[in-house]
Length: 316
Length: 236
Image (cartoon, rainbow over the protein chains, first blue to last red):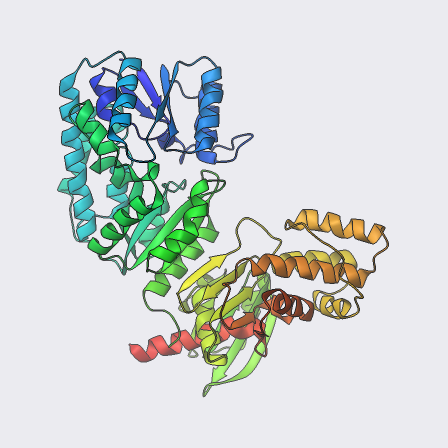
């Protein structure tokens, strides 16, 4: 089976169904220790350099060009210019299902057409299990770090459906009550620090929501039509009011005490920080990461101070 | 009770008895252990600052929490705290429980003031006096410490006085801090940087509102550590 590098979420059920193995290029970034040259966003620049240098290899590439950022689009084109067969995928800004169906059909053609429908069902089964993981962490029955480490991998299922399903089931079997001082939601793109969740948990912050991994789990489909209907709801590709409405619902249902907004240096999502602060009526900590490294001391100070604040450590 | 603010550059100590500060001491941070030379084992210690966990048995809190408690004790009605420390500047809005720290930049920190003072061959406490002698602040545009230094050199080469250049630096420094400050709210300035009168006046001018500086602004966090620990002890 050939490998298909992906720069952001595209339906893994379609990639597996077409007989290929997706490789989410982002998942190797946090532990890479990379110092990419000529970068804006370290996420995109790191996978770009890995592909251009041959450190990472994929047989073909799909660049999410609509619904992701222009840093990814520019870096994806630089990789495409190196000769790797590349497809550009566009999510609709307005949630147009027919448009997305056309995009999915073009993507399916790029992949050579559906060959293994059973893989589509296997992906759906794993996503259902992932939603159970998400529900367990929201209830406080599972550390947020355990849920995150699995849910962040839902875009490529670590390249092995059977092994990944076993890993998710094993995590589900280890449910236990998590004692934590405060229930916190993590919104925005995932942190580029590989130990972020563990560090936050060390300060008593129970991460009961991870915005983007939750998107990975909740969206899916059994055929092109149902995939188009589901993935057209992908909030990161849509207008802000759509995303805010879903966020408000999830934060309310999960009874969060505070919000951490993770932003990436040179990422356009930083510009949304003021909107989130004005709309989400909760204490909010904004963290801005840059290079892929273990969580720096300065960020640990912010997390600890936020934990103290949520625990009531303020003057009366 | 002893309050220690073991900051990145200076270590500060207060001793609080009966709600009053009866002793204040300060040493360079690498020598912070000297502050405990005359402290008996029975006297409780509360700490904050970068080195806060170095003191065995002490109740340690972050500088952000310490600032809230210290300012809460000293300045009733404070709504926004601006803490200009050695390595970073922290701004807290007490109305919304939100805080921001300057990111990935030294231009808004005490370390930058030390660099400038060193360049001019004066103590960091003399920068305010130089500022007061300025006829017109020189134009310093850069928000990067390194480039701001280059601009200062260029202004001196162009014939501007030391006082004008220092005043221009304070204006650029205050402009950078002001970006972090909410548009409304009563502002309290603390930390070592608050001792700089040039910075104080420029920040008030840019924010177009009063900037309150408590007496001994560099000791507010040490006091806050004591206030927090005393309150937590009372709750237990």
